Amino acid sequence: MPIPVRKCDATLGAEIEFDLAGPTDEATFREIEAAFHDNIVVFFRGQSLSSERHIEFSRRFGELEIHIVKKYLLQGYPEILLVSNITNAAGEHIGLADAGFTWHSDVSYRQFPSRCSLLYAKEVPHAADGTVLGDTVFANCIAAYDALPAATQRRLAGLKAIHRYSMRRRIENSPRPKLTQAQLDETPDIAHPIVRTHPYTGRKAIYVTAGECIGIEGMPEGKALDLIAELDAHCVRPEFLYRHRWRVGDLVMWDNASAMHLAICDYALPERRLMHRTTVVGGQPF
Image (cartoon, rainbow, N blue to C red; front, side):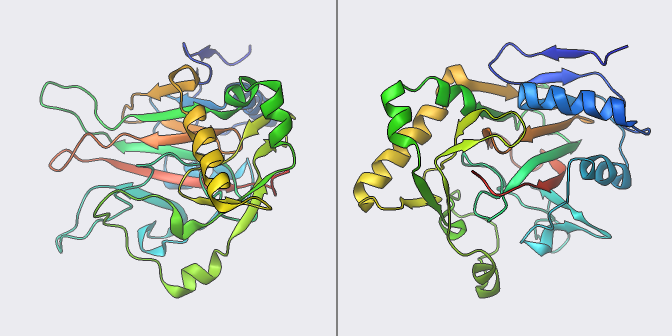
């Protein structure tokens, strides 16, 4: 029997009914992978995953990245990045407290950006009335590209935007540690196509982020920044969005070649949020 897949009422997003705690045979994995490619964002509710199993399932999609901010890697499991507002006895955050608070695609500043990210909810914040807080919003950059006028699509063909990690937008007074010189040296500027072709489906997506993208090769700076801002704003129009309301035990994975995402920061301690994230290395954009 095929695995049940329920599409969300949006241009992306689907729930897959499957228990990931046990082994996943090759045929089942291929079903999951196909649903992932079809829907860009997929989620599995009610999971009970060990760190080992989280890593094992993630690795089916490719090599796992070790995040550049080593301070927030899970002890004993460097493939898992902690994303959390929780603080320790010294008042220090145990994980990235501002991860995803501005629109972006994970690791777009690398020569080989992420194929996908898998975020597992360990603790989810709630308001006093029980309302879930800390939603994540995803933008379908394939649909955004398809909605562009043909003349604009032709104009973008062959253009490359320059990505700079140190320019990624951060919230005011971000608690994230300042980048060291070694981290800056590890992440030199990189140019990627503004229109990216998906390596598995062949579909085209807009691949730029305002702030992080500092220019376009061969284009005057002012004109380039205006175009980047225009495309960034176009991608996050309401008709291209899916908003995920978290539950403890959710595993959500998204395609970084065809989506941007934004974490909604509408909570604060004592409301706690704790997520475990793995990130799969992808190929060079083309």
